[in-house]
Amino acid sequence: MLCDSGVTHHMFNHRMFLANIRDTYLEVSWGDSSLSWSLGLGPTIGMSYYSASINAATMPCVVSSRTEDALLVPDCSRNLASVPRFSQQGHDVRMIEGCSSEKRGLLLRDTKIFVPFCFESHTGYYLMPWYPPPAYATFVKLPDQRFD
Image (cartoon, rainbow, N blue to C red; front, side, top):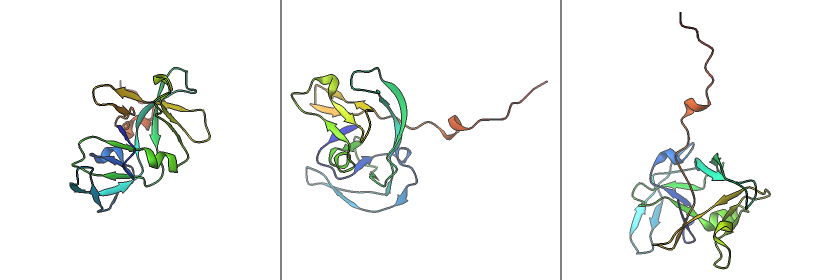
């Protein structure tokens, strides 16, 4: 997910990244003056990686914003993470030039949980690891079954 300081909402091109989506039609204007429309609004849901501190090893986790902060925009070419939205929510976004690359990322509000960013050298963009959420079946415990 590309970290963008110019977008007001997180934006996804597929509904699998939004939980409890509701129909919302908002005009989205891009930096090149072109326009798109959102089809929905909802909380983000996905898989990412985090560490318990800035220098610790990373582990997978399911992440949800629990607030309606993401738009479904099907013609969005890349999923976008809103840096201003992270800041408004009280998270510490670390993308400063002087900061070493292993310390660039998102420090979650009131915690020591750190989500590292990757730097895409050929574009100069920072990317936040973001993958589709696990299927519901992953969390369902089936009763023990015997087959004779």
